[in-house]
Image (cartoon, rainbow, N blue to C red; front, top):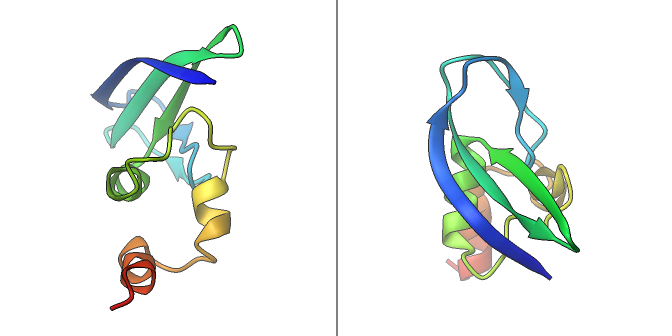
Length: 90
């Protein structure tokens, strides 16, 4: 079970990788940082703007419990907006 301790927006100062899609982002981009406790360990993951948008639309999913690259793999490289239309039945 994962417990979220801290969730905040930040502008990155050095290149880093999005936990949701695996995309490498350069400094200055806005990211969501989620820190929490998973199985007794403190971890922190970062999500890009698109993955953050996807997580907000799927708010029942705990961002700490996703494996690295999970969002990109499960969307089959569709855009998040296309995926939401498919999931919504529209």
